Image (tube, rainbow, N blue to C red; front, side):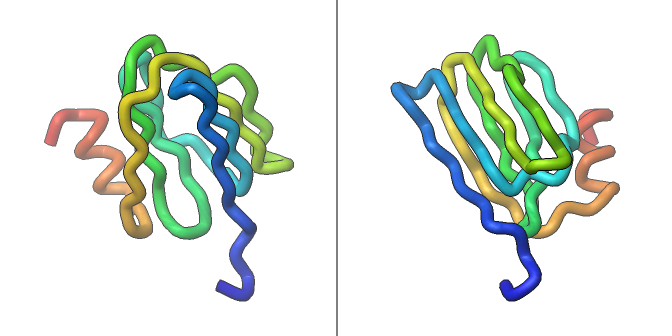
Length: 88
């Protein structure tokens, strides 16, 4: 974990999520956002999700909506993202 960017999250009232250490967004829609960080991917699920702010340069991201779950997966692969996008 020596060369990894610090990753933090703050969830307020299940409606506002602030993240640091985000290097990319793999996919997003109103029900699911896949945020990429050094330790893998964070899958954010809910309703009416909206990326309010995103700065890949600084690693900051803010999400608003009704957040129902946060799930971390191991390092992502391009295949896993493609499977999600195409229903595989």
